[in-house]
Length: 66
Image (cartoon, rainbow, N blue to C red; front, top):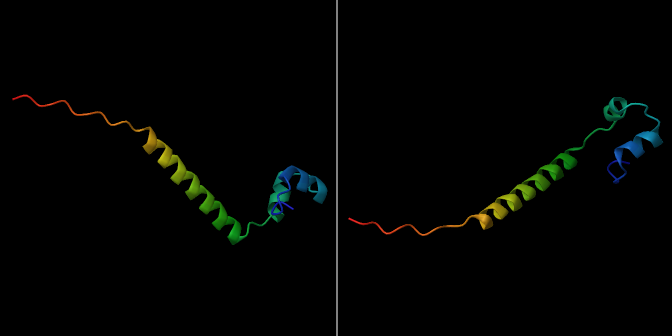
């Protein structure tokens, strides 16, 4: 149910697990879910870095006097 997008609390209620720890014991995370999570995280970080780059303002260097 969780993989189908059902919120954890709802899935736990439907499946009859009384505690989150018991539910999580049987909610095995698949390798493709881990891979997807890492890809999403990388995308988020790339976007955050790009936003920071757009905010950087370069100022002209003062002319040097000798």
